[in-house]
Image (tube, rainbow, N blue to C red; front, top):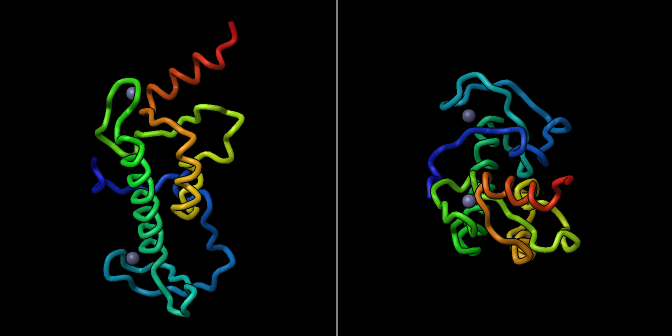
Length: 136
Ligand SMILES: [Zn+2]
Ligand SMILES: [Zn+2]
């Protein structure tokens, strides 16, 4: 499972809101001049570093859930990239939330939701959804 590639997509940031946070401009040793946002403990931290922490945390949570569900696509056996793995609800009426959109939730809550799912790679997931919801 490749965990070393990080990039920030819109989806990763779906439940992060820094707009209310106090910010100042400072020099980050990694990112240069950046906006620093005040965190809960009162320290200012580079926004980019914080984003990366969040992305890492979410990817880590996702990889835990992926591993717990068997670590590979139930349809084709694909198991290379955690980011390409998706959670498909076996029974749509049981769906409370989409796991990949809510990786800011606690592991316990995510785990409960993941138990209603099977693991599919993004390609198989599209195929399965198309079969389920195709208009014939
Ligand atoms: Zn930084
Ligand atoms: Zn697959």
